[in-house]
Length: 108
Length: 126
Image 1 (cartoon, rainbow over the protein chains, first blue to last red):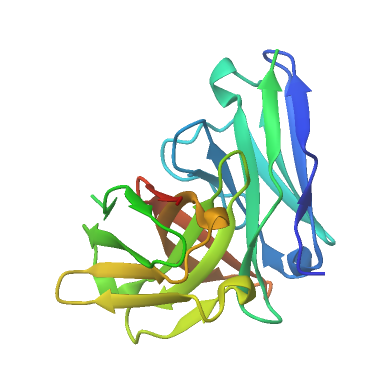
Image 2: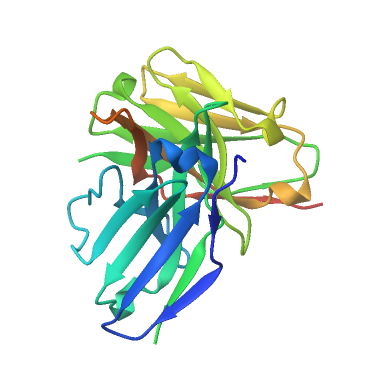
């Protein structure tokens, strides 16, 4: 399918680890990119390609890919990590971009 | 530094058109593609389309085919998104973003959008 499915919401205790998954056929040979979005703000790229972080993104953000799924892991979640997270990749069949359904991360 | 600066908020009536601009700076404009993404209130991110800033080639989301047009003005490094025949459900924040694509040695590809505009609220209401 040309969809990217994410769990709607996850919660994590402060300092603990949370994993966000993204599933879709387009991920079989395309790396996902991941975006953090806080209320009223534009999305911010946090991870892309082979587990690469843009400058300024803490190393507690990491990623992996397997089969038709990609995941974003926050190791040692901080209060400022509370946000919506979206995965993204291109559908090779029609060259259209797809965004995941989004995951709301709550830090307790 | 790379910046993407969008035009201001718009209020339109149903059936009208809107044209939002995205002015890029801090890099060679023609070297990167630009996407447009929108986000309705309380909803997720929706890809609208992509334009190659070098040759003007475009690719649009099927849902918006026939209503959306992306264009560039290379003289001012500006990308425009025009959406026609507006409906209430087009009320959203519209974003532009610069795209980069990488091919890896394992045969995989990856695309990412590091630089985003600040967003433009388009409200469609009678």
